[in-house]
Amino acid sequence: MLLEAKDIAFGYKKNTTILANFRLTVGNHERVGIVAPSGFGKTTLCQILAGYIKPQCGQVLLDGQDIHRIKGYCPVQMIWQHPEKSVNPRLRMKETLAEGDELEERVIDGLGIERAWFDRFPGELSGGEMQRFCIARALGKRTQFLIADEISTMLDLITQSQIWSFLLQEVARRNIGLIAVTHSNALLAHIATRQVTLAPGCFTTGSAE
Ligand SMILES: Nc1ncnc2c1ncn2[C@@H]1O[C@H](COP(=O)(O)OP(=O)(O)OP(=O)(O)O)[C@@H](O)[C@H]1O
Image 1 (spheres, rainbow, N blue to C red):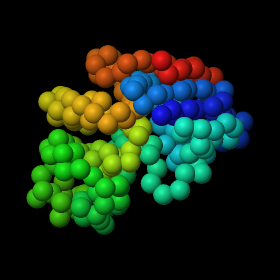
Image 2 (cartoon, rainbow, N blue to C red):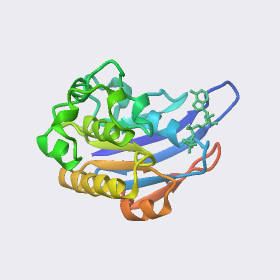
Image 3 (cartoon, protein in one colour):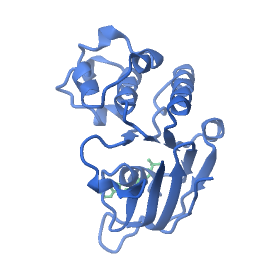
Image 4 (spheres, helix red, strand yellow):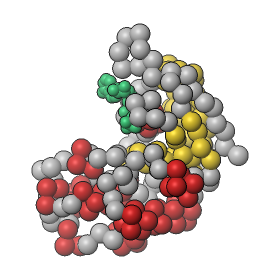
C-alpha cells in the first residue's frame, strides 16, 4: 500500500506559496518524520495528506486512487496537535470514539483509556486523556496510514513514552504507514525510519524504500 503526494502546490492566500512541487511517497512499512521550523507548513501538509485540504495543484493518491474520491471511512487518518480542537465539546467521549471506525479493545487498553472516562465530556478530561481518545479514534480497523502532527507535545515524558511505545507496536502489527511531525530530535530518532525536511515554498522528495 502506498500513499503518494504528487506535485503538490498550496498557499492559503493568492500569490503566497507554502508548498510547491512537493512530492512524497510513503509505503505502509515506513515511519516518516517530517521536519521543519515553525510556520513552514507541516500542519498544512498533514491536512493535505489526510484529505482535509485540497491542494491547488497535484494530488494525494492512496494506492493510485485520489484521496478525495474515497467514499466512506478514509484509511488515512490524522491526529491533531491540540485534541480540544478536534473533538466536539458537546459529545461524550464514547460518542467521539464512535465517530471513527470499529475499534479493537486492545487499542483502548494499550492507550491506557479508562472505561470511566467514556461518559465524560471533553471538558471533564485532561489534555493528555483527551489525546488518548483522539489517537484511539484514528486507529479504527480500516486505518492504513496515520498522520501524527505533534501529538505528544502536551504530554509528560512518561506518558509520551507509553503512548509512542504502544503506537509503534500497533503500526508494526497492522502494517500501518506512519507520518509524524515533531520538533523533538530525540523522538524523531526513536520513531522514524527516515526523515523529510521541508524548506520554504519548495520541497523535498521522498520515496518508499
Ligand atoms: N487556515 C489558515 N489560513 C491562513 N493561513 C494559515 C492557515 N493555517 C496556517 N496558516 C499559515 O500557513 C503557514 C504554515 O502554517 P502551518 O501550521 O502549516 O505551519 P507548521 O510548520 O505546522 O507550524 P508549527 O510548527 O508552528 O505548528 C503559517 O504561516 C500560518 O500562519
